[in-house]
Structures are given as C-alpha cells and as structure tokens.
Length: 420
Image (tube, rainbow, N blue to C red):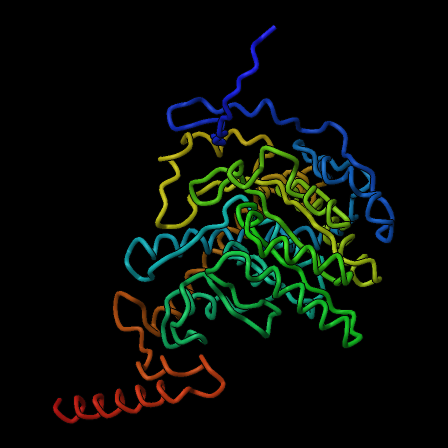
C-alpha cells in the first residue's frame, strides 16, 4: 500500500508532444459509427448531455456518409461549400506571402478550420448575425463579401472601410452580418448573447452565432455569456472552436484535460453538441439543428468544433518551437477540403479535371482582387489614408479634448503643406 503524501502538489498541464517527439494520436478514437443519435431540436437540454461527450460525424474518412446527422445536401450545395473553402485557403496563402513581403503588418491563417466558418455561414440565414473571432474569414467569403474589400482592410489602405483603425484580420462588415472582431478575446460572447436577447425582445426570428477559441473559455466573459444565455433562453449558438492550441499554449491550460469544452454548457442548463470540425456536413447539420432550436424558442446551444490548427497562430508565431513539425500531418481527422472532395469524387460529382479548373479560377480571382486592392495602397508604399481620419468613426460625438487635438493637427498640417 503506497504512502499518502501530506504535501500538496501543483499540477501543470503539459502538451502530449514537444518538438523532437514523434506525435502519436492513437489515444484519440475516431468513431467507426456516427454517434450520437440526432434528437428533435426542441428536446429538453438534459437529453443532449451525452452529445457533449460524443462526436457528431457524417463524413467518414473514405468519403462515405453515415449516421442520422446527414443533412442530405445537394451536390450543388456541396460544391459551393468546397469552392468557398478553397477560396479561403488560397486567400490565406496569398495574404501570408504578402505579409512576408511587408505589404501588410499581420495575418492569421485558418488552414484546417475552413469547414467550420463556411458550413456555419451556409447553414444560417443571411440576417443572422455572427460574432466571430479572428479565424473565420470563410464566413465573409460564403456570404458574398467582395474579396477586394477584405484585402483592402488587410492592407489598411484607402479602400479600407475602417480607415486603417483596426489590426488586419479583425474585420468589420455589418452589411454581411459580421460583427466587428475584437482583439480582446471573449468580448464577442456577451455581445452576441445580448444581441440575440434584443432581437428576441423585438419579436424577430433572427439569431446570433458566437464563435470563440477553446483558450478563451477560460475567460470570465465565456461564463457570463452562458449564464445569460441560459437564464433568458437567448436565441444564440455559442461555438467553441477547439483547435488544440491557444497561441503556444495547448488546450490543457484552459482545462481541456477535464471534460470536453461542450460539457461546460451542461452545468448551465444548455443544449450541447460536440462535432467533428473537419467534417463539413457534420458542422452544417449541427448548426442547422441549433438554429432550429434557437428560432423555435428552445434557447441557446453550445457546440464544440473539434479540429486542429494546422499552421501557426499568426505570422508572428513559429509553431515548431512548441510542437512537433509533423503534428498537423498525423491529426486523425484529416483535412476538411480533402474529405469533402473525396466524398464528391465517390458520388461522381467531382474529378481531377473540374478540380484543376476550379483551382485556376480561384487563383485568377485572388490575383485580380489583390492587384486591384494593392493599387489603393499598402504598407510598402503609401496607404493613401488621410491622417485626419484618425479622429473619425470612433465616437458618435467627438469629445472636446479630441476636437482640440484635431484642430491643432489640421493647423499644423496646413502649415506643413504651405511650406512644401
């Protein structure tokens, strides 16, 4: 019988693999059967508690479909989803390279997570408001936001509707139901729940979809949002994108070694789902289910999207410093684009010829959009943004001290112009 220690010990979570280790994810079970079952969206919340521990899947790795969550999407819809995801990835590659050339200050790729944002946008209605974090450019692509407009915001040039006031990738496009992305993680959670409550109070059937990473579930804002969403049955979908890493901290630092992130909704009396985030159809089905529940007065749903961040956190990050280089390649749930392609090929709705044609079409679209955007300025040339715009679009009514600063700036600028 071992002796019981009288000394308390502090436990520090550590990732399973570090640089130099051989990653092995055999401890993660890829379900052979598509579980759990699909209940009626209006069931009591406690009947979904087991769904927080299972994993909803539709697409098997061999391209087959299986299970009750199949959303029965048409081939045209699937091809549209594939196109949006491929555009997302091509845009990421282009803008990453442009950042390395000094054309923009910062960028964040969503490689490996494209199915989440694209399927979410396609499963929701256009009037539903999304409250994203910084890796959901696929929402804008799927909702038809012009690529040039997005690229102008990234380049912080005179075509940027924000006049360069925000960090690149922190988009704000009200016309496309895309709430301003905040660099302060977690704020969008309570904002989204509040928006949903307001729309319900006004008697509309519009809902909010809020997205956060698993790291921000450790923030107080996450728990405030769940508390309000539960108390007032807000028409909101609270999405936790568990991509295993919060910058260089693995998900265990956010208590990911305990129950699943979806299970955090159980204690608040919320419906809960856990879904394979690399499965376009499973994400679509889960979003569709939660949206129907929210519109029907059933309240909020917490969805954990189980995925993997294949690239670095941002252009400022080198993931090989904290995880094995091969880690993304051995992730057992594959790549969302490849998986959807495999299914379309299997049902004879896709082939190499169509794939090559689409790749070329997207490359031309990205190239043309970027060239048009760069003509309006970049960090490597001149952004074309007038300095006095720094005082605009910040306050509804400019405070007196800022009015004084603006007037002083305008006088000094006029003097400088006359001297030139």
